[in-house]
Length: 162
Image 1 (cartoon, rainbow, N blue to C red):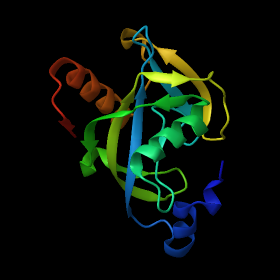
Image 2 (cartoon, rainbow, N blue to C red; image 1 turned 45 degrees about the vertical axis):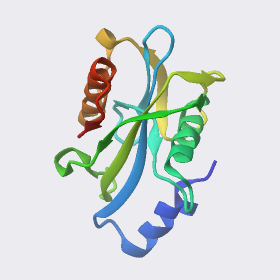
Image 3 (tube, helix red, strand yellow; image 1 turned 90 degrees about the vertical axis):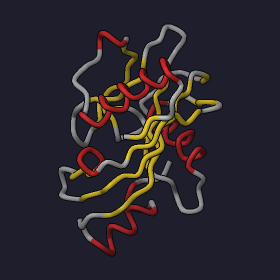
Image 4 (cartoon, rainbow, N blue to C red; image 1 turned 90 degrees about the horizontal axis):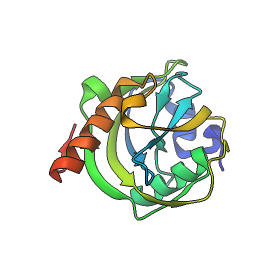
C-alpha cells in the first residue's frame, strides 16, 4: 500500500495545491451472494461510501478498481464489470475537508466474485460492512446515486451515464 503523499495525486497536489483537478477514477459495487453491498465508512467525510479511487501512473482503470478494493477492504475482487460512468459536475465535484477539489470522471464497476475476508487495511475508512438494499446507512449522495444506477442496470442491462 502506498500513502497519499507518495501517490501520483499526492505528488500532483504538492505542485498545484488545492485547486480543482480533473481526475479519472473507479468506484466499485461489491455484492455478495445475499445481494448485500460492501460499504465503508470513510475517514475523510465520516460517512458511508463504496470502495474506489484513482489510478496510479500507468495503471489501467480496471486494475485500479481491483487494487483499491483490496487496499480499502481486504477483498480480492475478480472479473469486475463496468455498468456505468459518472462525470456530472453537480455530483462528481468534491471538496475534501482539507480544501482539495476534484472533478471525478469515474467508471462504475460491479464485482460479485471475490476472495478473502474483510479487513481494515487502510486509514481511508473507519468501518467496513455488508448492507442489504433496505438497510443502507447514511451514504454520501454520489454513492447513493451510484447504487441507484447499479440497481437500474441490474434491471435493464443498460449502461448508466450519471
